[in-house]
Length: 257
Image (tube, rainbow, N blue to C red; front, side, top):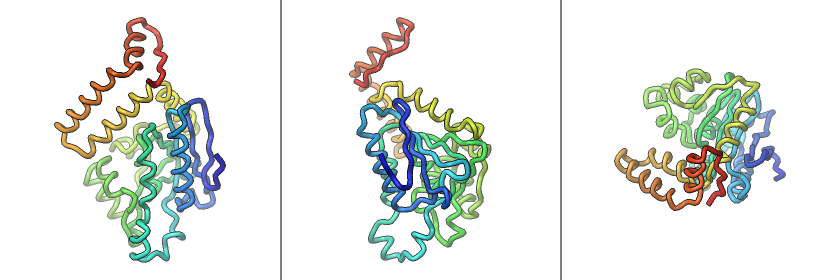
């Protein structure tokens, strides 16, 4: 895959996408989003890829959407092109996606990280939705996903003031799953992705689908949905292999079937 705004690296069953606009602190423009979406589609269709990492550099995961690209838009132009909607391509990927965040993840960068399945944060990571300081509001899910991650009060404060939170606060409030030393971020992300990639891919799909369903349903609906998906795993050859391997005290050899 040859792209202008992202670099790709494949390690076994793991595909790593590195945002590559360093002079703009990886500001997210249309080309980058399109290339990332295209890359994810390729990884999705590649039967030899089972987990994905999205990262930036040590200064910024992404410092927001590209303001130069946005500044001359009008309501009519933004509305007619359904501006930002193409970002949702990230959420359509069924394979597990890890955001490995160092430095700034602001505005669209924070929103992109939240579109991933979970976030591993370097100690240097800083998160925020500072759109209000530009006279706008978040437009790629910031008001919706941040509220679900950290609760109404903290999300409201961050969105209304534009303040940033550091990695320790982000871990305390549940925005990130773990905080890792900067120098270990990528190696730990790859290690985690490899652990995931060696599991049964159909079961990973079902697990991801079930967790995401929890955000759009009541508890009783979610439990019923989870149970149906759980029952469905007993049709998988991987279920038979996984349980047999457990009883035989060996590592399972999953075939994604």
